[in-house]
Image (cartoon, rainbow, N blue to C red):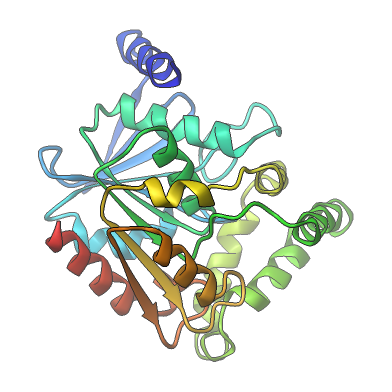
Length: 287
């Protein structure tokens, strides 16, 4: 029922020319139902949809996509409320994020794409795969459990902090646990660039995402039902979603592969880009 609804909606958008396309060098930029979408590579290749984590935008995947776009049709997009995607309301849910993903897939007429989600993007990918199986899943530094009461209170405190002091102190607190100390000491300019990008995001979008994560459902029970290949990428020094969490997820998925990046913190594709890309490329070649 949900898929039929969004398929009809996507077709109507295309028919009424509501999908705007802009050429930007080697990539194409599209607006699909208010979602800012970027495509790279040949449409005829296997499609991979990249879903960024909180509180970033589609550019988080640029390094990975640059290595894959010659062989795959790569799609990244800004989750609603982030980047250039529209946010007509500050009341988002993980379900609405999932519906936006489905609108992108239907709007681009993708045939059985692979979903690649990082952290919050993994929550979206897992929920989407509950609704409809895709060709394969790549899940990086993510989890299936819903928030505990302690986690809910922590996110609520984050919202209050943004209201009282602005986004910057919140981002500084998040980065202190998202990056390993070694990387933070070695690459302060990279971290500062990411921070500047986040500072340009509407605080309403960030707070809405915190509320969406507070209210998300638990997808653990669906793991045993997954019958497509799954790559899970974790990190030895991940303080946001511990390695043990993803090890437990792996044990519940029949056709799964777990790769652990030894020197990385939560931001695995940033801290260990070579290890991350190698794991993804090896997995894709095995399909």
